[in-house]
Length: 103
Image (cartoon, rainbow, N blue to C red; front, side):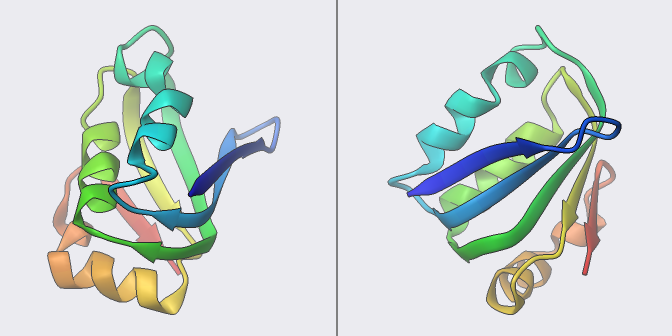
């Protein structure tokens, strides 16, 4: 299960908590449906991953889809847990032109 919480008013930040895997990826997609469909545009979308304890390939795919969505200009993945950060780097996500990973 993944929980998506919006924080920060000046610069919108969303905090992901729990596990982002095949079973929970639809929760993430539902939370960001307006962005994924281009109905809402966010210039710099910050996802605080400090509460995310696990991510699998379907979770990574959901993040890549979000970064490529019509409503997302730039995606920042901030404060990933060590194990999550390792997965993101193993896959080479830092090379994505619209994604930044900030420890």
